[in-house]
Image 1 (tube, one colour):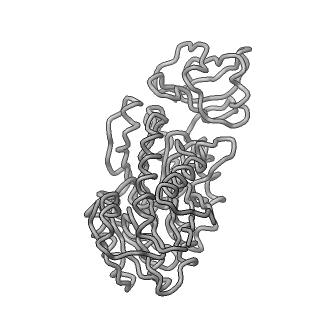
Image 2: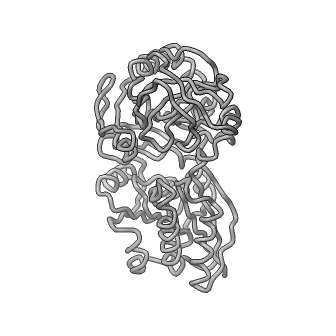
Image 3: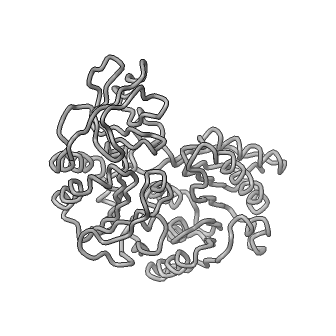
Length: 391
């Protein structure tokens, strides 16, 4: 794709781009010249000096997304280099799993492109108009670098509407099975790619699942809410804990039960709304030694931040009576919009309202295949608080 026209930033807005921040907001643009939505364009500072090459879409909250700070052609070879540059940081994962995130959008300097691979089968999410238009370049580069068994596009996220894109689900290379087998820390897991959430499995919780399995003791009881396909439950049960998983999605629970069977584990999985289940008293199964609260991303924008904070308060408020004194409450928040400090505040208020205390013992984040460059704080989205209930 040829580079088209240019956009000029307002005075004082160039420094953060030079420091590797990948987004330009609407209010930071001074003017644009000969630029259409969905194209590559040069980005200039207020003095009209070259700053970067980025993608442009005037409909987006971030009309310019930076691809490179070099004045270079964006070709298939460019994407080959980017894909190869993503490999070293993930090499260590091969010792423990055959599945990981290959590309994490802006964090891997490929804004608008998410790629997960499950045992050689790749699942792609295209989140921007320009990256959609660049598919003829990045798709052959992806095949050349990784030689995948298959590539399946599952671009169903709501953010595509903002980009002027419809949902797209299709095979891009080969034929991806509806369900793929993967391994993680010696467990055999099924990934429901076609019918599951997101790309099919939450790879970002890998290190926290492992840490939790090392933390629990044989015979301890665990309530795993929003358990999806059973990742936390499986890991903890294999460590000797007695787990109960709760989720509202039937396909997830069917997969979780099959995952348990494949790994010779006995875990009851209950179909229920986790909010209502906790409030109703967990069917009298508690109190538990550990409760995991891992809700989906409720807040994708700053306008929904308060709704997420309220949801976390509600979950913690109703979880506490079902947790033993001295028990561990893990509260996960997968939205950048609510910081870990604000997440703690929601937990603090809930604990105060219940007349108890919570002590923060650990804080874990997304695994290394979801890199979090410190110049791009939005990339650090997953925060898991390990909170000890007072006795």
